[in-house]
Image 1 (cartoon, rainbow, N blue to C red):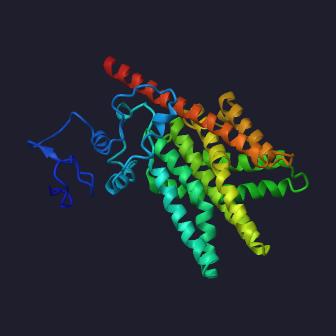
Image 2 (image 1 turned 90 degrees about the horizontal axis):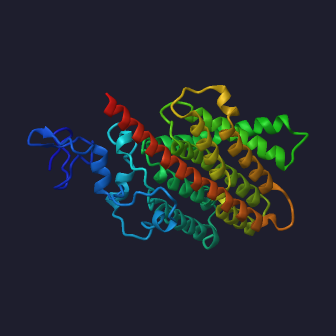
Length: 359
């Protein structure tokens, strides 16, 4: 089936062009029964048709991880969020998404890391060291970010935008944190570290999500996770380089191993929670400074600061058991906010339908 818009040859049976997204005609009229996005989502089995509960069911959330998925299906996931593939609110399902791509990304990163490890450890080639540090630093934060991206039910943020936020947001939040550390240089402790770094990430996240395009709780989770992923990866790369320069090769791998294991419950989750809390307060309204003092935002932000402070507290047993406990606690709050985000979508759909019926 050749596309009349870009002359790309598509497989038979598709409803839109896989190259440019052009909707195909049927009997010289456009099919109105479903939107472009719904056809796209239904074709790759992204839209659950039977499950209607927004209660957390972990066996369902991760049920597609171990299924077979084609390369074409993976490629199509990356075209969401464009002008052609962003759905209307009435076309968004409020059921729990079932992500799977994040697991594949982790496997790819692990294979790349093992290859670099062989280059350094077996062949003693120092040219592999920069790649080893970069892949080791980004592997888990990027995997966690892909999970948040797949959980973004509105599908209104393109992946290229997420990559932009990872790099720009990550380095910007680190620079702001350094500014705070310079101000607090005579009073550095776990509490001030938590305040400085979380405030820096919060400022950066709010800079990105204050535009009304990103008005959903799930959008805040995703943008926050992108900033946190950049922050975590750059910080891990720095610690790994310090370990390498110390002359202890084992310390390099130990640093990357533990920071990778704990990364999902650290900067990525904390920044995601901050972004979700702010979007929950902002909603469809223009940004106002007093939103930062809303109790719904403050209680989450203060919780994040306390978790960060406890994470850095040097008390017996904190590493690794206390940090694992904090990681689990962070993700409990994450899933609670995902549930709130899905319920928000359901309420917006009902409101839209109500106003449509009135008019």
